[in-house]
Amino acid sequence: MFTFIVTCYNQADVILYALESIRYQIESFGGDQKFQLIVTDDASTDGSQEVIRQWMSRNRGLFAKTGKIFREKNLGICQNYVDALKHTAGKRFVVLNGDDLLAPDNLFEITDRLKDHDIVCTAFIKFTGAGEMIRSHNTYLEVVLQEIIGRKCLHRAIKLGCPIMGTAVYRKSLLTEEVYDLILRYRTANDRACFQKILEERADIRVCYVNRPMVLYRISEHSISNFHSPTRLLHNREIAKLCRAAKASEPSAWHRMMLSWQEKSAYVRMSSNYFVRLLRFLSPYYFIMLWLYVRNYGEIKKMERQLIDPNWVNCRDHYKKIRTNVKKYLNWQD
Image (cartoon, rainbow, N blue to C red):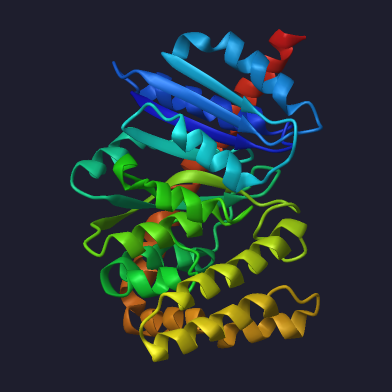
């Protein structure tokens, strides 16, 4: 059994893209595997739940098992995330936000690496609402840095709230009640809380990075990457809270100071003033990035090119194909 998890909140206009990208993976690469689909909706008010119900009903033959977790009260992505994880039947699984898509590459080849690793870090390509892939190499510095950070300073980077591992896949056995408990203290910081607790519990974790896009990440006015998004403001507050939590159990005075510094940087990111937000570049996290970038400049630039240049056209065409499939589905509904 392989499990697909989709989390949704007020994404009726784009959730079909995520679901159709799952259908593409199953029909193109699924073979004889059995599949489970879990969709969680956090009390959407735009008709998302009905869109999901209709699609799952029409495509129920793809899945050996399905589950819908539809809330009447909005509780945040972290509650949705944990509830879905607790209903996961597959030994391998992937979590997809409702406004994103799975990339055209064979997802199951990537998750097969979990035979030899506990966590497989993956790449993504960003795209706009119009479906244009963002091709600027420097946009993906933080993505390819997963390879360098994973080799050199993974535990420290995670504690400092480095935005890595957002699209990683990992062994289900890493999910303990303690991991769930930490995630549920937050509303938006599900990935960071999850990996921070996993790495706190396991010093011998085996991590690898795959420099291929697993997810197409939609950039919108509501996404966390938008500085003016209310979700971004809440997310930064929660990153500061995560730093405080890590500081409480940190034995090293030096690293406690670094965590305090990073906590203050998270609050700087919430400023509405552009010039105040620039102070975030003085944070420990950015110094780590700068040090790794300078030390590994040639390798990083090569990895950025290897990620974007061979893949952006294929990802663009994949998005267009999924959009066509969505239109066909909507015409069938009509």
